[in-house]
Image: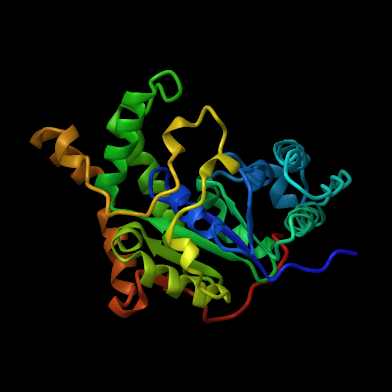
Length: 303
């Protein structure tokens, strides 16, 4: 029997909020193994924030197992023996326990005792996911909505074939609003961490040290240089590729991409009050990290 892992970490949040950046920093840690986006909990609970009807009955259609099949195939060139896929289960709680066990064994096969999974849209089911992972940490990347919308539009303009709808600012507005609502709801429970993108890029060492302290692992200088993303991204995800280089504070595309009228239209439609409420809860001394670590531990089963 494989030994249990020391920590299970899931990174989530609105697209273009720095989830891949944080994943690459964590991946530079000597004890961490990370994966390509699995979407495994989206398959289990629902691809959007709406929960699949059979989930309320504690049942599963088994789509999460197919997500593990794809993940296993992506790890085929990694050193170490890959674990066997879990059997098909019909009870949701049992199936999700098998998912967590598989990810544990996958990390152990690479000689690591901490794993990091990053799927931005997992944020829509953050509360259910945390209840499915005993002792796990859900890290929510949060970034100013104006910069997120600008970055989404910029990506849509650069890769129109891949993101045909995202050049419309309305798309980014809807995604950011929904993600922030989910984060605000989740951080009322234990086991959820908010990392502010602006703090991460402007005070990377302080933020990472605080995050490591919460996660129970020692800070390593190597984390200041993000890992090569090719190990956990697909070759066709050009917008995610980056050379192994130190992090520098990013500049906003908001002023550059939009005229004054459009900026005003975007600002009025973003639910910036949620962003400000979350930010007010974060102490200036917390290194840009808000931890909801106190309070009652939940039932580990999603119900």
